[in-house]
Image (cartoon, rainbow, N blue to C red; front, side):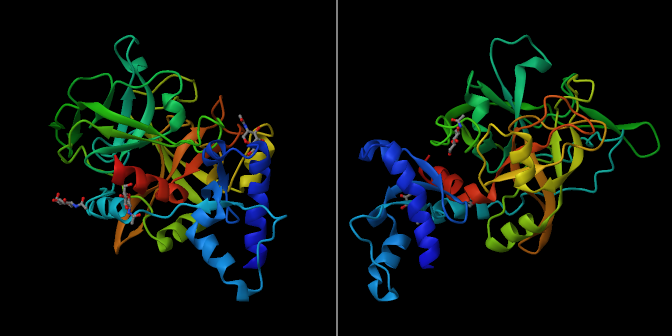
Length: 355
Ligand SMILES: *[C@@H]1O[C@H](CO)[C@@H](O)[C@H](O)[C@H]1NC(C)=O
Ligand SMILES: *[C@@H]1O[C@H](CO)[C@@H](O)[C@H](O)[C@H]1NC(C)=O
Ligand SMILES: *[C@@H]1O[C@H](CO)[C@@H](O)[C@H](O)[C@H]1NC(C)=O
């Protein structure tokens, strides 16, 4: 424990020096603690778990004048926000979606998929520049960098084929068609970008969007689950294959009108460090191979996901948010980098509780 405390303390000494002792500046500093979980650099006395350790002097450790007093304090999951997420008992439900053409996702089988719409673009596909996911009736999860240049003006839910107004599909062997209700464009109440993102354009790439009204769940609009407990977070870490969904670019770099899904393999973070030597990394990021199949399916802000056992049932759980990746898709291209959703649950639950 002492060793861990020590490494935690040293991490923030650096930040304290850079911050030249100004409390306000230090408060804005985000760090990774000894377990590489996101935290804030604050005075140890404002961090209950560290304060408790230091106060247990009989544990044989005492801070001296010469030692840093700023620590990387991990934020805790907020119970109010956690209750809001746990309340989503219908999340992540999926049918066995036989995909029609290769990697195309069957209509209505990924009802948490959302698109961010930006103004000033021509009507049609180019209005939608980022993906996102529905995580509750009011909240959308996406990447912080989707807010960097321009802010989205609305969120599209229940979309399938961007080229048609009403989406229909053939069912059965006959020529029966089934159509789903039109997609909904929902206004934005607040955009909440992780406070640690503007300082460092490759980390803390996570944002929440609060919708201006509750959405009505339906077959084509339903939230995805998040890795809410430690068992799920362990399952996510042990999982070596994930899926990635989106309307992203195909191998020919043309956008797809319907969502596609591909498998990616989890790599060591070290593989991403080697591929992107100029960027900083922390264990709260996930590194994957680029899609081995004929497309790279994701959109920035869209999900990395997999079916896990979620409170006793098989459900799709979002494990990551697409942060950045290869500019060219296909076999042999650079790995993809994702924000680890489980590591940011303290942030997500806190923001949901106070928004
Ligand atoms: C849980 O859902 C019910 C029904 O939608 C709602 O009335 C209640 O306020 C929700 N609880 C939380 C903590 O969000
Ligand atoms: C991000 O922070 C790391 C140190 O934590 C630094 O090495 C890196 O240069 C920073 N990147 C940017 C884009 O500011
Ligand atoms: C959760 O967040 C809300 C809003 O910031 C706060 O009022 C509440 O005390 C927090 N709850 C816990 C258990 O931390």
